[in-house]
Image 1 (spheres, rainbow, N blue to C red):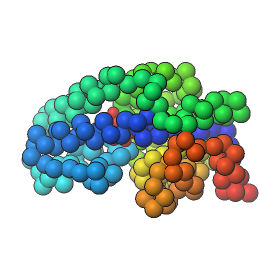
Image 2: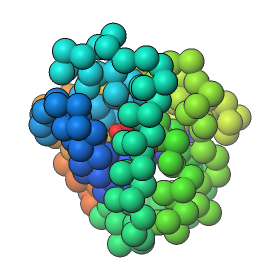
Image 3: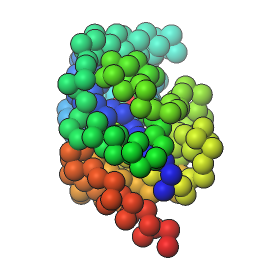
Image 4: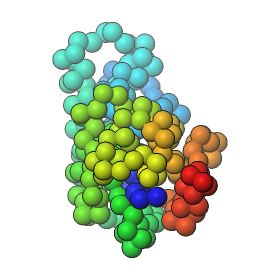
Length: 221
Ligand code: BG6
Ligand code: MG
């Protein structure tokens, strides 16, 4: 195991709730109601595809022009940026800083594979930019999570084979992306929802290198 590739929203930072609030506001403007359960289906999904799913949910797909869709997506992002404007070190999820330290000490490389175009900005706000050797730009990818593209791009940017990498995710689409990339998948969250992962921690506070290395070795022997 040579690298750990991280998702951002819901793994590194507690930003998933801000995405939800911003989408909920935009949906309400369009007369669409979305709840926490529906929001689970948006986790890990790109901005434009999330909008598409919300419109389908509200029976409004095919109603808007490309231009209107872009305006809606921008509007959501403006609300989101406002919500995360005061993000700081205190919004790093429990255990993450210690886990990043543990990886650095063990010479395990660290990359980011977030669907968010705000990834670099958020890492900066959290004071974590220096910890990440490379960040995948999601705007250049053919397919979003659950497709493996973003994890494969992270491995390529590190110059590593997928088999050398482990991915960490909080959402099912993300776990599926890691698995499709043939990497070991580590999930953080609900065991039932994320059952497809190779290993699940109920909280980021419980992430630990020894356990993850054990899972990686079991998968590779
Ligand atoms: C993912 C989030 O990390 O990034 C999604 O889980 C979000 O909720 C996606 O839609 C895209 O984020 P952004 O910041 O580019 O709109
Ligand atoms: Mg996530």
